[in-house]
Length: 72
Picture 1 (tube, rainbow, N blue to C red):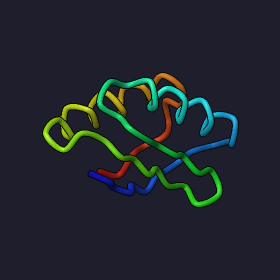
Picture 2 (picture 1 turned 45 degrees about the horizontal axis):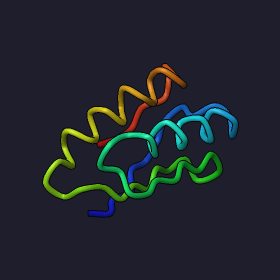
Picture 3 (picture 1 turned 90 degrees about the horizontal axis):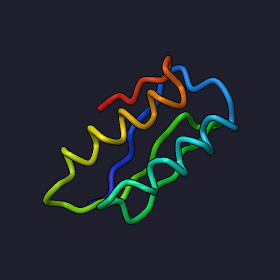
């Protein structure tokens, strides 16, 4: 399943790159991209576990950028 989410308060391109790397390491994620310019997260992950994976994505992003919000 592919989805796109709007990000709020993503402060820098370096943080976006770190978030993208962390998301790609999550089991079940086949591809992900975080864009600082568009403030968007594009993710492709396992359909059956998508909600569970997104919870892990939110946790991973909070570690890198505590102020950033993924608008689910």
